[in-house]
Length: 450
Ligand code: S3P
Image (cartoon, rainbow, N blue to C red; front, side, top):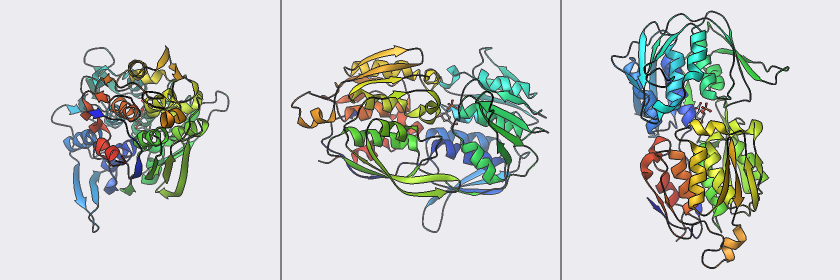
């Protein structure tokens, strides 16, 4: 894919449905009693992997149209104990969320399951879920004895645990909360900072009994889940994914003379770190038309070109912007001053080692970046004024050939960089965006002012 510099971006984009919420709607819908109807479901490779896994375990999932012609995914749930053993391996493909959340559900089933994924997923750490699930009494074997996929999960009756996770990971938290539905007593889960809370919100809507309880002594964020309630099918409208909106937020801020409206974007406070960072960098993003979709807050975002200044990003905000850091790094590369990112070592175990790839990609674009164990310092090289005024290359990133290593978020972040590059940005294997945003390039093109 070749991305050329844009003179200005204008228009409206409705970004696709939230990936995290779409996965959870299929999972909870499958183990609930009755039918769950989902509008705004993200039709991407990752979410299709989740659907395929539940179909293999005997759940009927259909795509319907409502009377307005809108796409609705219907999940005919069979209750907590209604899944059946898959005839063959479950394949989570590229999706960490599918793997780690399903593992929690499989841990409670009275049959053996086998789960694997693609080459990238098979390298990602699973010890973080093997440990708590084993403590709950589930027997898990990593086929290659490396705490990675493929896993054999032999589930059954589970015991409740009090678990202190050393990573703030919504996938670990959700895995434990889902397994806890199959335990006899309440399970307590603590994490160092609050990770995205979609599982807690959606479990509550389906009828589960949960309570938030922080540990005032350690500062950990906690949730207690009481098993024994029946989950009931729901009508769900999935908000637009703020992680997908992030690319347009950055593009609108960086490309001169731009104004972009993003409609129906989820602004859950466990996900809105990018909005807080944009504010700290002096970016003009207005939040309008705030309303609720079920238990999730949603808004329209209006983004205008802005002069950005550097900022420091670390600590408790990291889980609220973890997937946005590649594109935040592109913004930092174009801001005045040095942006420091810390406490982000989780980026090393995503779909790629994103810290390393961000550093390598920005360097290829002519940016000075220093890598640390858990982040980087980015020397902002361009300012908006220079881009507007400057003849030739002044204030622009250098065009480069980028290999995103099949990581969808790296491909999209580098495409945004292409909008403000002197020569075209060439993105290798660009169709990896199908993992979370299949229409990304056409939505981006639709905003170009010619
Ligand atoms: C997700 C949680 C995050 C995030 C991922 C989706 C989820 O991962 O990076 O894209 O839906 O629970 P971690 O839980 O590993 O931080």
